[in-house]
Image (cartoon, rainbow, N blue to C red; front, side):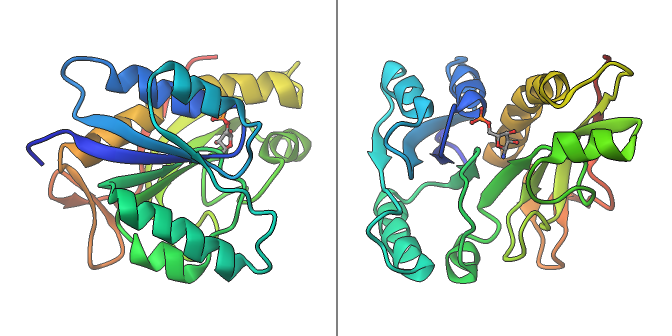
Length: 218
Ligand code: GRF
């Protein structure tokens, strides 16, 4: 890609990962820019973050749509009109229909707060503590139709500490999310990261048999 890649970021809440992407995109040499932020909630603080950065926003509430398919058709319309190079899900608390996911396959990333494939779904921090795991973390992955199951690209590993509670652990994981999401977005924008026809993530012309792992100290 010669011009900067255009991202659409989908959020539902605080948008701290969106902020990390905004901050990174503001570096002169950044290979991507954020063209649009979409939220399904009008009160998402991430919308305010986008406005402060002068990024166009759109709220598309799921209320008023009778089916998931109807909502996703409206969302697909918004996305088609904007034609981003990449969609980054950043705390977008909706399960997407396979139709929507398939039409953006290879051009949609998500960040999930666990070391996938472990701990898909919600409440990962509490579940990790309950299980007594020594490590936790976050994963950036390509989005495929099955929830939290697409090929993993990049992980940050965080040691679990003896006195952790879910909030403290979540905060340390979130700090690492803010490192790895912009990095993965850069790789994609630079054309270094693709979803191969073999269903694997490829980085620099090599298939990733396992995600790239960044170890974070406690
Ligand atoms: C993050 O933990 C992310 O991994 C998960 O949702 C949370 C979003 O946080 N998908 P924020 O809105 O980016 O602060």
